[in-house]
Image (cartoon, rainbow, N blue to C red; front, side, top):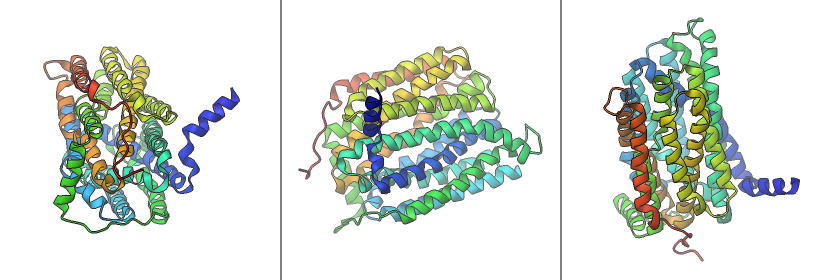
Length: 427
């Protein structure tokens, strides 16, 4: 039993034996805890400012993810032309600035919904470049044999931080009542403390990015930026394994993956929960996602859970719609997180292992486009369907979202890859 557990641990965390990747991974884990505290606080702030409006939550999500829809393809061409260190330092400094602005305006009580939308748009613009750059840099610090594990561990850090950050939100917001709001639990300034803590977390990741030994890259002669974008699009269109995985991710991003809208709306409006329960429900989703990432990290074949993860996600979303209250919602949301991460880690690893290195930035930016760029229309679809003021209401609306996701999975089921293709130009 001990030997089996040791072997599982070695296999599951194999990419961490590479020192540069290990430094980056732990710095991201710390920084993302702060980012998730901020994201959860921002969702709650929007609901406070709007009187519990799902539409407001949807529109802020649109503002945050619209840049990925507009800029992802261009961002990929930039990442393939510019050193990744320079890109990451610029994006992280921008995100540090937006976190500071949100902290100060919330603390002073001058924050407004339009201001939150503006800050979300600026953050989203930085993330349109940051996400594909971070996804592309995995191959800089691990050999190709460890890429699936490194991708899974990236998702693990993302979801460990989600779990910790969202769970800490309730505690930190309560502490903010004493430290920033003068004991007034209704004062909006209590929500500034998570933003301040996020500001502090950025300094660690900035130091690590500035000192990591990024390998030299041969950028070679370049044509026009538009030509680079077209080359990436031609590759994806002509590679069925990559194209069909991206179609699946994009379709589910338009429908059932919008838990950044579903969880806060169900917590605050459907279940009538306050900050602590809201944070705990979000953390339950994160725990499930963390388990899904760990499970996927221990699997050498990233395709194994592509279809299974999608089915678990859809079935558990239907169960959430049928859940009467927050107590039973905890395990259901954990199942949602498990299914979603099993699917997304499998999809990301499949794409990473199929594409040639010279197209990595452009193809991963297109992956970000279908995953994150579909967030704005997906958030509007989700916020409309689950609204208590719309025809279906929150529960039938969520079942409808799951049904749309199921249709997409069934249409693509036989077209999804069953074995990895060798990247062009690789031996």
